[in-house]
Amino acid sequence: MDVGGAYDGKAVFLTGCTGFVGIGVLEKLLFATKASKVYAMIRPRPASKKGPAMSVAQRLDQVFRDCRFDRCRELGEARWAKLRKRVVPVAGDLCDEGLGLSKSDRATLRAAPPDIFVHSAADVRFDREFNEAVKINVRGSVQVLDLAQSLGCTTFVHVSTLYVTPARARGRA
Image 1 (cartoon, rainbow, N blue to C red):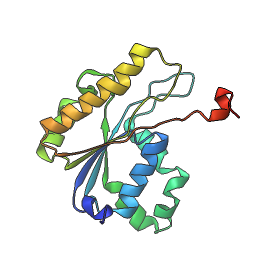
Image 2 (image 1 turned 90 degrees about the horizontal axis):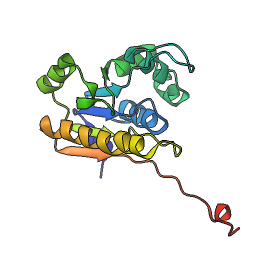
Image 3 (image 1 turned 90 degrees about the vertical axis):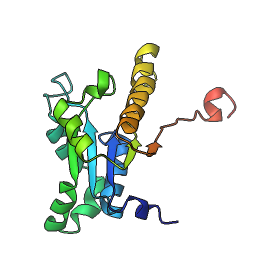
């Protein structure tokens, strides 16, 4: 089975591309598939103690500087630029009603709907207040699935991060 070939000529909607797993998914989509387009839903970052405000375009540029894109850069500047052009940043937030998508972005998605949704966004902080974690990880996932269905998408991939506590931590070393 050619998994990469399943994406050839397809438009993909990707959540979580600024996270640990999502960066790897985005790199793989660009390097190892011929996906025609990747809509990358990215949360704009407000100014905080962590740093200045960043637009979705700035956050995507930051993602592209990650070392996991080294093999894409090694293809040469012209090819790397062509790969980057396949990515369309879309401002959104799992916690916002309707994912916080603008009318303009919704119209773009309706005009050229994604064939495949890959949902890899999540909050994996274990000290998060329970209701907030549910809002992000459950309600957010339902909203992404609702968007996929509303656009007529029939392929939905949900990526979940899982942590396992070793036996030693439970006193069974």
